[in-house]
Amino acid sequence: MPHEILTRDELYDVHTATMEILQSVGVKILEESALRVLADAGANVDFSSKMAKIPEYLVKEAVRKAPSAFNLYGRNRKNVLRLGGNRVHFATQGTGVYVLDLDTGKRRYATVRDVTLLSRLADGLDNIHHVSEMVLPKDVPDNAVYAYSLVERLKNTEKPTDGYNYGEAAALDVVGIASIVVGGEEELRKRPILMGFYNPLSPLTHSEDTLVGLRVFGKYGQPMIIAPEAQAGMTAPVTLAGLLSTTSAEVLSGIVIAQLFNPGAPVLYGNVSAISDMKTGNIALGGPETGLINMATAQLARYYGIPSRGTGGVTESKTIDAQSGLEQATTLLLAALGGINFIYDAAGSIESTKTASYEQLVISNDLCGMVSRILRGIDVTDETLAIDVTRDVGPRGMYIAHRHTLEHFRKEHFIPRIMNRDAREAWEKKGSRKLQDVSKDVVKKILADHQPRPLERDIEKDLAGMIKDIERRPS
Image (cartoon, rainbow, N blue to C red; front, side, top):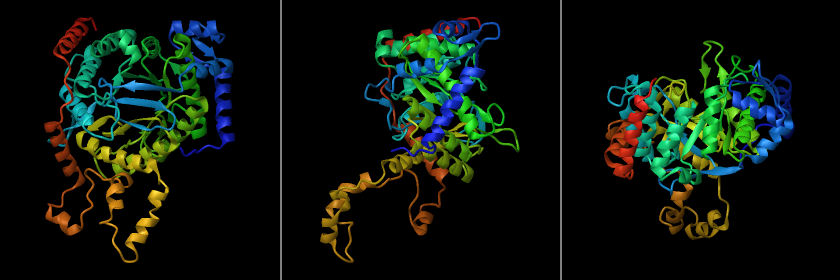
């Protein structure tokens, strides 16, 4: 069972504070059709100021209509994420601008080739469940970045992925690309393969582009994450309870609009918020507070009966070092123990998710495996208590040769892919290699050996034609 950080009374207090904010302060809605549906449903809307005050009964209706669980698919039908309940899934980092170059180790702008290789690498790592839009390539026209990125991901992974949804044209484009791959719009509705992202503008504002994308994705049955990126002390109250109540108002008002646009639309109750470091004014995603916010977010999502999205595996470190390890492990483990259903940024990120690293993706895969093992806990049965085995082995005996050990060790023990457990002498004999060097070898091996099932040639031709059409549009 997930660990709950808020008492029942504290959870209710956050809820009532959220309802007070929605009803007495309200939210700013920068898109006309969203204001109209809110007004028609009974919200108190001021069209001149674009403010909407939302009564609690509309929130209750919306969370009742939103699915408590749903499936997200990869283009390979076998790759299915069931989002909801106590399931925890790990996704790669998203929307980075830079990569750490695999050969030089220096930071540079991401390219389409990085999208290709990072997607194929993540596809070949067993503890990563979702291949997000890891980086935004800078070597293609700005108006077609999202299209190049999605097409390359769909070519190079069979796992579920993201769908860019900022603005009507882009949202319709990515729906069109996904429809080509799965065999049409109706098939896409039945088998959604795109995870959309909706980040309210903290504090308490919903932008036009995201609201339009919310409407389009809901129409085509593609799930949407509603997740504020507030900073405590800057765009949210400095106190974590205050941040939770204001961001919850942002999430729930977004869910209300999503359900008014498209009743039953799949959504996730999310949060990407963290504290602002008061020394620098920068976000501190790797701080322990991020873990606490995520644990509370998961609990609030369960309170409303909606799947949750959080963040973990994040760091402010600019390289792969002790700081990155400490911050990534802490934030990922707390989010997972809290029961976040979909943990974004769980693998491959450094520098507050601005930068993606090939080596870090492999290291994070082991970290995700360790966390998954912790979540499984200890299985206590007659078989695992092993009284008969202990009787067979007896005092001063060895269990290594017993059949029970052979039958159970793979399930009971986490077996790392790259962590070194040799004695020092053996480690030195093998070259005293550091973790980053070992992970680089794994990167090269996977990229050399692993190849997802290719798309059919006709599909690739249609996708290339669609990208050209997008490029020809006026910017």
